[in-house]
Image (cartoon, rainbow, N blue to C red; front, top):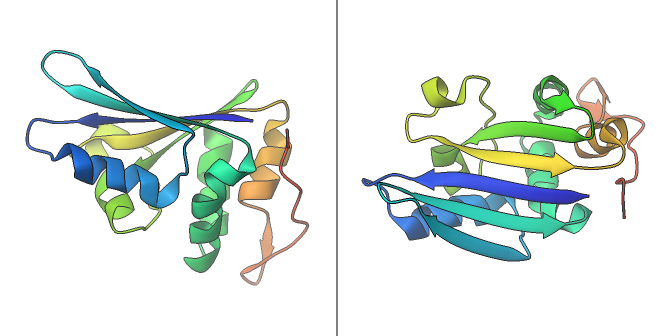
Length: 144
């Protein structure tokens, strides 16, 4: 499984704070800052389930597995799952999904792009089904 996380850094934002927002929910192997002239873009990349362990734990501690599962399924296409998190919430370590990123996250979202050989298993691992709020049938992560 390969994970790419992207976040635009607007003129009014502090680069370190946007990077912290990403690192609160993702453990990358590399982080690059691309200068696009009028703005900057942070691109973080990681491999394997360990890169998503912080997000995995946040979804469980916040008890939002059902909502997360819904957003992940909406962003599933082929061997890729794309989802967006609110940048400001991530800065304080909270995973908050957005379906209309530019409207719901005024400073722009943090976008996760996960490429895996088995998207269903990925979703079942990161956000399994629940019964009365408890995960059931948790899968092992794909592409170990």
